[in-house]
Length: 284
Image 1 (cartoon, rainbow, N blue to C red):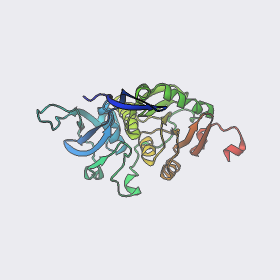
Image 2: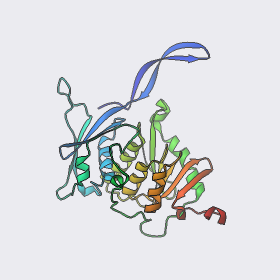
Image 3: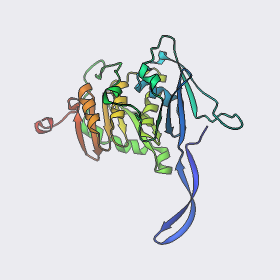
Image 4: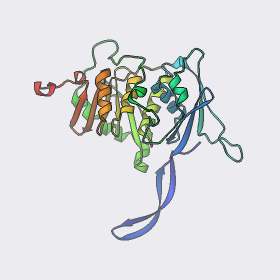
């Protein structure tokens, strides 16, 4: 199986001084995802948690919704001269009775590390029907203090082990409504990091992820908002900007969407009812 990092020689220039030294880089390799033996998609990812990545991808595609939908996931032999396994091809087998959406079988696409929904022709095509409403689950409604949200990026950064060595990874983390870190995944693609989180939750029977907060290290694109909705996550926060379609989807589904979460400041784009805003002006 491929390593998370690799070493390469670089020429370093500092204040006019030139030297040669090894540098640690994040690994990037293709992963082909097959569904019941049929090729479905290829994504560029950081090796590791491949089964969770494939499972999470299929949750966002509307194929898998619960642990029982998944029969197993296995590595397939890669195309090498000596016939050895490259660990870059996985086959996801669904349980009997799982209905496969037609759009999924028709969509055989190449996905880069920066784009998780390439190949979808229109906005309607990516609005996959969610299995669960975006609500707060049982009990009292989720009510978050903005100060709690403000402290999460530092906790995410502190937990990024590979980023410290490479500076080249995105991260996604799940927190409870009280700020407890549940899980964190890193990947060269931010959508892969989210898929790994969601896939691990499916494998452990924890979907839907009600009453949780999803924090991503980059921007909040439509695809990430869709992945949150498909996993039943009520709050998505990002350290950078959201896209207009992400805001539209959040408003339509009831997802709380927070962007530019930096220090004590943030922008709330949708779902403000889950934040304990202190002033009437802020509520307006």
